[in-house]
Length: 88
Image (cartoon, rainbow, N blue to C red; front, side):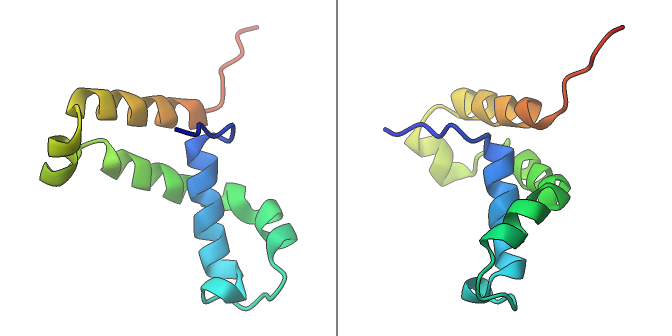
């Protein structure tokens, strides 16, 4: 199985940005990659909302694997999206 080097919250935010910006997904821009690169962080709150919803698997998902592992993975993705606190 492949493992992404891009944090999951960023990947979801980029998909949401692309969905709204790219003409391939219903937006207006035919060449959207630069616009998405510039805008994805604006969609991070929406991405986190999606991830928070996914913390609890549905019945089919739970039957396919370990719900506790799923929740731990999603929580790690949420934690990875929060800026680190610097103590001075």
